[in-house]
Length: 123
Image (cartoon, rainbow, N blue to C red):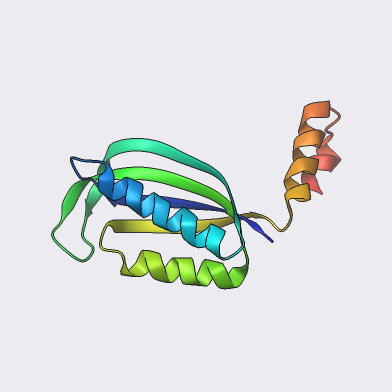
């Protein structure tokens, strides 16, 4: 299963119940479909670079968070559908970090050993 990172900007609410539920729903969907959630990261509440509108009025403040997970492409498509329909979500994007976890581990080992050459970086 490929390793993905989903970065999300959601509408800011005074109580974090809405954001917690959105994150729980996303993580539960991945796990119920046989995927693995590796890390959930909150990047805090920030002023948006421009006002955004999605299924409601314009907003100027959003909550930024990230979800790292392994899942199948089919589950990723259904997760994108959930994010598309949810009125709490302003923007999201999913990055594919690696095809296998071993790819990330090998990259980390190569960087940790300090034996990098210009040829290693280019190839």
